[in-house]
Amino acid sequence: MAGHDVSEVSEACRALSPYRMIAVGTDFSSCAGVAIEQAVRLGGAASVRVVHVIDTIVEVAADSAMSAFVQSIREGLIAEATDAWKASAAKIGGAAANLPCQVLVTNRIVGVLGFVRSCGADLLVLGAYGDRRPDVGFGTVATACVRKSMTDVLLVRERQRGAFTNVVVGVDFSATSARALARAGQIAARDGATLHVVHVLSAPWRRWAERALAAPAGTLVPPHVLAAHRQEATERLEAWRASIAAEFAGLQTVAACLDEWDAQLGAGSVSGGGGGHRSSLTGYGVRARADLMVLGTRGRTNLRDVLLGSTAEKVLAESPCSVLAVKPAGFSHPLATGEAGLEGSTIGRVEKF
Image (cartoon, rainbow, N blue to C red; front, side, top):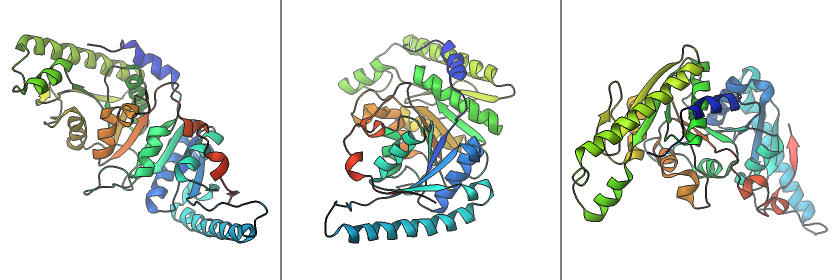
């Protein structure tokens, strides 16, 4: 079974300090208010920067007869945003109520990612609504930011006020999932939450052979081969669980090894049910009453499904709880770096209020 050694977990814990600068996007909604509260709770008010992006295609043309008129429209939008932030901040209360906010006039995704870069943030926090009924999945701006941000992205549900209680992290024994496990351990230890370390067993030969020949599941591979594969995954998962538990004194941990098609594997795990390994992971989260799911993203190409990885895509589409997407070391994207050729023509006035 491919994957990295358990030492990756300890190395990731040593390499990843708590988030030092946190950027938060706001649209002045109550959901965004909760996201700001979470950012302050995780990093302290001094490390939080807030941005509001006015999504407009209006351009100010120099020396144009219309430029004064267009500029007046921009100023009106900024004035409205100023009033909206004052009202929103007052409702948030506490330290968050005194945070300044910047407004950008540009494309939303470009503006948010540019703000993250400009303030040197290592975490982006967004309030997120479900885009399907019931309240699952996330909207297009939130998911686009997850795909393109060079930093980790936390999508916060409106109901997630206060500390997390059950944190589920998916691991596939890669270096990025070691980073995700380290982040999940930091948050769970801080909040006194139970950390569920979950691996979904997916034998590659099964998927290829059974789809190709349309054979019933489990009939093409000898049972002893499947049993050995399960045993290896279970032992590796237990080693990763033990490693993260050793990093944080008093951290409560649970290891759950799920099969892609079958029911739970190993004592004490929660059944993921059927429906493919991505559904098994979110299904486990529902049964474990998770209020935060943490997972690593791949970021290897510009193809959407590989950019995040199929598991991350499915969790974003299905998750009813908050999600923390952890980026691979060295991840880069043209929009996040400002190399896409969009910022120079679209970013308008910047105000701080």
